[in-house]
Image (cartoon, rainbow, N blue to C red; front, side):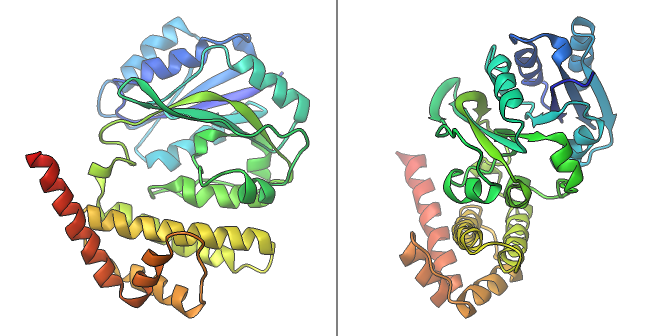
Length: 327
């Protein structure tokens, strides 16, 4: 009999964190036979693999797959290929899940048998809870488009979703390999296909903010900006697709604009030069007369002269850095 859930954990150079993550997945209130944990060692160069193999002796059901480095998206795709569970949850190896949360999660999976479940999380900074995000309870199934439009609050993190495995396979939903910020690219596509969605209104996932993570403000590189812009460009094409509803298209337009503004500011903070794609996207936005509900002033300045906007924030971030240094 197939397990109820696969917990797929991509592992790459996380020796400080991976044991806590794996142990949290076993410290649960359901039989180990009801779920599986699949580790995808994505070519780790530290002793992450050795830590996983040591834990495998303690937890014989732990599955370990080793591959050449393909990045987070490639590791998740491998986890999906090897998943035997009816549902799959992609848990990042530097995070952890709450003790004894699977009992409640399994009850909801069995009750609703939905394409997608969306759960709450706790943001952890310096070993302390910084902020909890708990979804509103949904009593009746909603479509993926409604979930995307009215519930996500731009929280697209892959680990917030538990997917029905066959839903991903049948809709050929794979992660785009070789890019950063793949959550922003994958989540809108997945929700567009989902017919039924529910929330799990508890903060069962602990999201660790650590130095050196992709999201870190000190880790902004040209690739970060280029990948975000490429994703935004792709979302623009999806937004214009005639098959999407007007409400979904309008929400996606809002996300495109907010993500674009954030990306330009990231480039300024990282003291990076704007690539040509940044100018092509703003030209398209001007040509199509996009509307934006927030950050109106920023948007209008960018439309008038993107270089001036970028330079202003680059100087502002540099000044703020000097003030902090000498304070």
